[in-house]
Length: 137
Image (cartoon, rainbow, N blue to C red; front, side):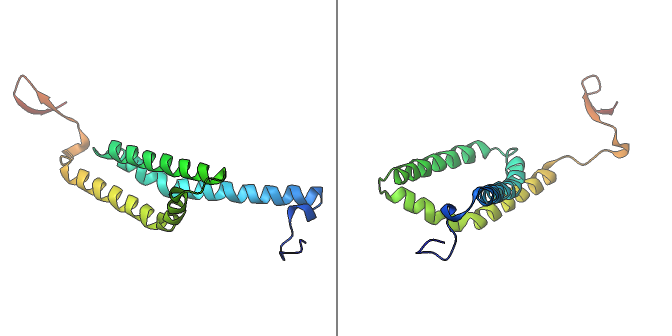
């Protein structure tokens, strides 16, 4: 163990222990990424049907790029408020995911209300130019 921390450092681990520790760490990171994707992807797929999705996608991409530039600057030693603000925004992750789900569900419900009622016997309804009205195929 290191002198300053009760936790073992990677330099205190043997070859096999280091491999197991790194594997466990990386598998944990990957598992968390899968959880995040599973939480965020379904509402994004539902929102992709909405008219304003393109705007949402562009704004989210621009905000992410802006944060990434701030984090990159901080990583190379350039102190900047962008990285600090981006770090603090992390506490809003769950409310943002909740808002994504709520918005997606609201849009799905609105679409269902606007959709025409299903036809009897499941036959498709087509507009018939000859009769000027609806007919069944």
